[in-house]
Amino acid sequence: MTLPESFVARVMRDLGAAEGGALCAALDTPPAVSLRLHPRRSSGRLPRVAEGAAPVPWCAEGRYLDVRPSFTLDPAFHAGAYYVQEASSQFVGRLAGDLAGCRVLDLCAAPGGKTTLYASAVGPDGLVVANEIDRRRVQVLADNVRRWGTGNVVVTCAEPRTVCDLEAWFDVVAVDAPCSGEGMFRKDDAARAEWSEGNVRLCAARQDEILREAWRALRPGGRLLYSTCTFNRDEDEGALERLVAWTGDEVAEAEPVAVDPAWGIVEGEVGPFRTFRFYPHRARGEGFFAAVARKADDAAARSRMPRGRRQPTAAVDRAAATELRRWVAAPDRMRFGAAGECCYGWYAAQADAVAALASALPVVYSGVAMGQLFKGRLRPDGALALFVGLERGALPSADLTEEEALRYLRRQEIAAAPLAEGMNLVCCDDRPLGFAKRIGGRVNNLYPNAWRILKS
Ligand code: SAM
Figure: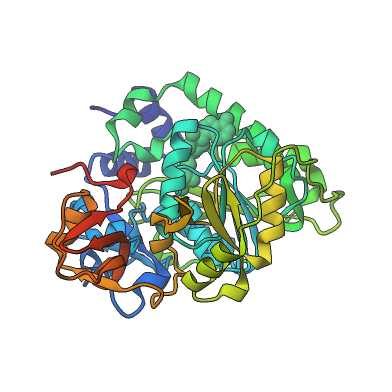
């Protein structure tokens, strides 16, 4: 499918014939394939797909792959050893700076590429609120958050204005805005087909609304990250110009971001915002625009949490609490609670914040689902296997071959021999995948039905 005519005309006009021509030519070449490694699951031992892969220069965990493997048929993918993420997008990690212990709002979060990056960066003392407006997409986001297993994310499904009623509550607010998607023209024919001048105008108006809401949620001194996957000036610099005009002297410069000129990123400024453009003919990645600024320390704002309406979670009984504590490596750093039959764990540092959020917003998932109460007994949840804070010695582990692991991930029968009697943690290449229970010569495959591989 050819590039939209008026897109080509605009690019030629804005960038000039040589630069515009190079951009359009690059959009007709194959896209780069890249992933981002899980820092807790790949240190010292790379997943096989990433062995020998070239690093993404602006992201320590980023890797370019020479070919696109079948990620679905790689057990390491299901173990959350990496997230398949476009290289340019990984730049937001550099833009965000040191996030340890921060509260981050990822306002347009599905499917969760950037959420997982922020979740690793904030660590167990921090919290990421990952919001997605679309009810179908929020389920994919929640699955990716479970698989990443950091246990420090709250997934919500709400309009930006509802989430941003948490005024001045976040250290960082990230708006990865819905956009006209010109940067996806190389990867995705649908992006070319759906593009129109009218849609660009619609996107720009929607971005203005989202940014205004985002600004309310940011605390004085906090950082706003804005990004799109389009080249369109009206949706990129234009959106920031309109925000700066509206917020006036409440916007301040953020800390400098170190960028090596060899990376091919085009830097710019919009008032106090530092901007970064990725063109596929200059940088190795898809089209991307990212910007950062701060809310001034003296900006008028008062931290506010809307009054809770929803039922908070219930306490767990003593027997369940003892079992839950046994399953995690640092029980004193965690708190536990129940919602219906499911028991959850949250890091203590943010547990009060999570409870307050749960009473004020529609929460789809939070912390780590630890286990289900089943006939009065606690059965470990699939998400617990993928939790980075799992106590590996709590249950016997069975390490399966890749072939047998794929049978497990398809919820097919697996051989009993590698498993101990009773509940087992099922692993492949020493990376946990889920649970299975051996009863004599029979194995009950407990891999969640919703996650099973359907591809043959
Ligand atoms: N941050 C995601 C990632 O890294 O995987 C990608 C986000 S995508 C570019 C933009 C998201 O914004 C989509 O999931 C879309 O459903 C959502 N969205 C659409 N309309 C929205 C609106 N009016 N307000 C907030 N989000 C919206």
